[in-house]
Amino acid sequence: MSDSYRSMWADLGLDLEAHDVLLGVLGDAYGKIFLSQANRPEGMGYFDFVMSEVHGLRIKELLDEKKAGRKIIGSFCVFVPEEIALAANATLVGLCSGADFALEEVEKLLPRNTCALIKSAFGFKIGKVCPYLESADLIVGENTCDGKKKAYESLGHLVDNLYVMDLPQSKSENGRALLKAEYLRFKETVENLTGCLITPESLKQGIATVNAKRAAIHRLSALRKADPAPISGLDALLANQVFFYDNPARFTASVNTICDELEKRIDTKTGVFPSKHPRIIISGCPQAVPNWKLPMLIETAGAVIVGEESCVGERGTRNLTRDSGKTIDEMLEAIVDRYFQVDCAIFTPNRDRLEHIQEMVENYQADGVIHYGLQFCQPYLMEAIPVEKALEEKGIPCLRIETDYSMEDIGQLKTRVEAFIEQLS
Ligand code: BJ8
Image 1 (tube, rainbow, N blue to C red):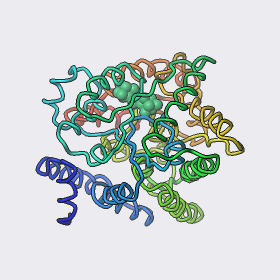
Image 2 (image 1 turned 135 degrees about the horizontal axis):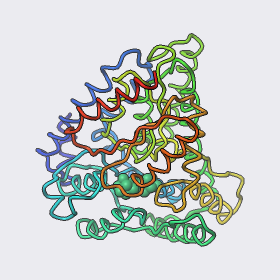
Image 3 (image 1 turned 90 degrees about the vertical axis):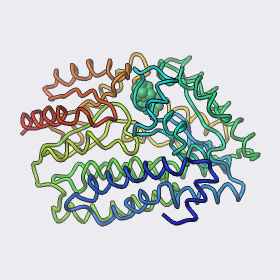
């Protein structure tokens, strides 16, 4: 990394030594997990570059945007509507973290039995290693699971720019009205932050930009239906992870470029793995960068992941926002309609998710589902049981995994994953 990045990180208040350790671990893991894969599409070179610059060039771009008068908004949840942020001259970036950091310090603020995703976000703040968090003009938390809800109360003492969005817990009329009211409040907050009033034109453009990004990911997902799979699950997950950081227009173009390449691979039956390789849908908690442990285990154990039923995946990206609205209110209604379909496990009841998982199995011709629940994540761990039951009724094999971000259980997970894949074969 160049010296200018070091001074940029220092200006953001990062702990340079700790940050070096993080980048070292990240780079090492990336090389071993991603760069060692055989038969990767050439288009993945773009994502390799993005990852190598995820704390470098991308942060510089965000700081340049700030200098030019834009605001940066960081978010932990796919319920925060990017369309509204873009329409008010702000850039939205993901803040969820997929690695343990400063765990001892974190556990002085949060109970030990808190999920790794929440602890990670705190660790990155306390350890001063996340340039996205430190660049953000506004950090948006949301009242989803109990863990997050209460954790934001503590996070509010560590940052001075936290805004908490309330979210419904049921798909009722009242639930929808709450979401609409919260999106209106968010719109006003972003307008106040940026000093830019949203217009019908800017909101239409925001919807078009985010729809294009999601449509590109839909195209990528559809290509994963092919046998042999033209792209590994790890690489497709990476594209879904970069979705949260990259410049939206550039991301869309890069995903479409890789899709052009994958179409040619499908025509020539070129795959990353041989034909008839066991095909897996991974379902459950979001997998934020650099949480690659389970996908790596699955794909080195003789299977290919063909879809992610996850917020870093199809739960987060499916459904476009209706773009026929003319007025701000019509477009806001369309945005509410689109997000209200996200079937996060915080909703009760949440039958749509069960149906969606089965649909994905059928669409991607999967042989089985691996349900991934983070330890202490009650919504997803509890919902794993009805998910497994529903799949069993359809004769679809399911393996329930409960894990965290540590590597301590890797041997045991490997054995279970291998046995499951063996059963599918
Ligand atoms: S819409 S999944 S991004 S809330 S893993 S913190 S649920 S205890 S992340 Fe999520 Fe939005 Fe829902 Fe998606 Fe809690 Fe579970 Fe931890 Fe979780």
